[in-house]
Length: 575
Image (tube, rainbow, N blue to C red):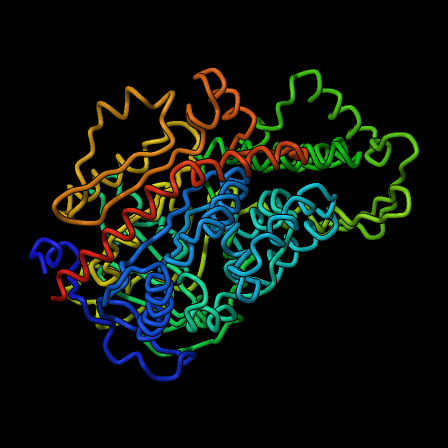
């Protein structure tokens, strides 16, 4: 092993010690490496890959480890990831893939697929289902508001991730997945599909990432464990979110389902102010659609006017309502006349069921459907639901390392003092999960990087090169100046190779091969924005799928050539 790898990761090519007992035992694993179950799953996958290679006439004693990476990018990334995986499957490349790792929007696609049994054999059906689902009005306001209210009312770790789950993620993907990571173990362990890795980062360590690209910032989820891959601290996936103290289980919580996890993996893509405005704009758009925007705005303004002391954070929220002075005066006039219930549009009516200083419950009748708001969303005194906006709290969960003694003299020392973790979108660090497939324990030899990012199509690989350089991690040399020159009109394929580290093949989503001119590339990027609140037409979805597939179709021979070359190199090294 290269000593630089060993220094950077503090790990060797061994699996985590002593974790081969009951897969659902409440155990904390403090050791570098991968779990025994992941090793078993990957071994079974490699056996299948060897069979495929032999069928193709490639003789080798060891299959190369190929990792497919999907970047973030909201619904654009989710759709494009679906297209890429479908075409990789048609080309026979997915059969040669060991790992599938994703960040943010790509995890929306991945979780939807892994919720299916043996999904690799059903990608055509999954694509057709996606086209239909995104056209249906399957998002339900009552379901969203009820979900947010119940999370705020019942969950000790309620945060903006719960709001994000039922608002933007549910609205954009049109589905709430009830299955969990532990339920997809069987197909992973049998090796019938690539082993999945889902990326997040620890928000409390984000400042360290910005200063020195800290290894410990990254947090991963697999079907078997969740935790910090570098230097190695995990909990069983089934016990992620449960309460531990000193390594012992204190309170078992229900396993987090995909609906919540995909909100965690795809949360807070932008800075605080941008994301606040996006969430608020979403709700105001929905409220206006259902004819209740004015009513809820007035409830909000009444709350602010009744404050005993100024609250700068609340003032920021009120400012984001974008009310001018005339609108504020009109609202005050209505409030003083006590005509709140007259703020509904003609033909709609409200009925105040209960009213007191702590709880106001209002039902709004529109046609045959009844919507419950008020205490369900904006109670007068109990601002539980809105509290995370003021504190900007995301991804709250019990810290499984709390009071754990084995962290002394380790890179994560200090984590044992924190009762809560705050996890969020890994795109805030690097918008692609390179750090999760680069550790030597995973032995990745070829990375197929599909970049669905908004903006610079090379930002992920430049950021990864910088990260690797900071920690002496083997990675191909990247000509930053050349990539900057081509950023506005990139090609559809780039290959980066070095004497050490994996070979990287990089595929920008919008490029001069599948789009055309620089103007056409810009037009496509504008059509498929990250925060796309409007509904894509069927033509839009079809076009995006085809654009993403083209990057595979046009380069499948190059990909296969490299996989075959790596397999033959392995055969030579065995002799």
